[in-house]
Image (cartoon, rainbow, N blue to C red; front, top):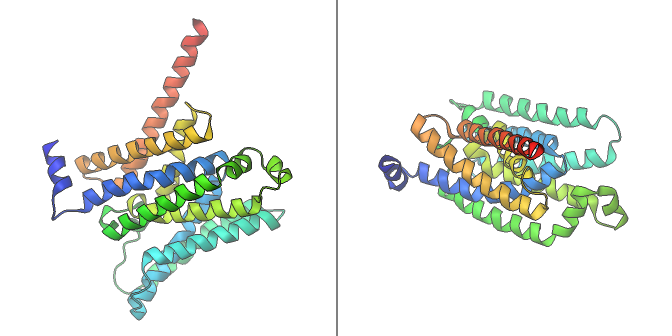
Length: 285
């Protein structure tokens, strides 16, 4: 425990401290956005957005190393690609009556393919694994500041549009009858998801971020039914699993992203077993 505390407070090794703080801050956005996404059954749509982000990362790294355009960072490249994909998927969902799943899958695959091609043509050695599965070395003070800003924006939107989002997530037809701007809310939720995915990319990576967005919500769903409580419990669970996963990754000397996701999955399995046992006991009492 003393060794862990020294690593956390070491002024010459801030990465573990940055990772811990970013995990706590990102959990706020993950819990809120994830609750909406899981309730609305939009996990596959967000999956397409998260994987298409690699195209923006690859393009940004290519421009930086090939043409020395320093202003274009992987963060801004990923953010641009994510938001663009969110708008495309939103319009596809609204105006394309057939084969929506095929088009969304194509966006998923094309984003990954374009990103890998740009990375292959980028001069020097670029390790795609750190972007695909996360790396605490990518987390900086700027990431922390961006996460604080993101949390403020997400909390503001969630508070402002809570009744509309509630109606949209649980009964879209009712929301349309009540003149709730369904298309706007759908696009807004996808953009919020894209930004959240990009913000958490340094810790858990493009591929694993989807699990941390959904698994804590699946755990919370087993214990609460109200949307507001679902958000709160999801935030707390995300904080818990992120913190435990980071400690585990430090102790085992393994990448943080996979350990965080596996921690979330273990908690989900244990909670599911607990719920089943509880139901069996109630049945026989």
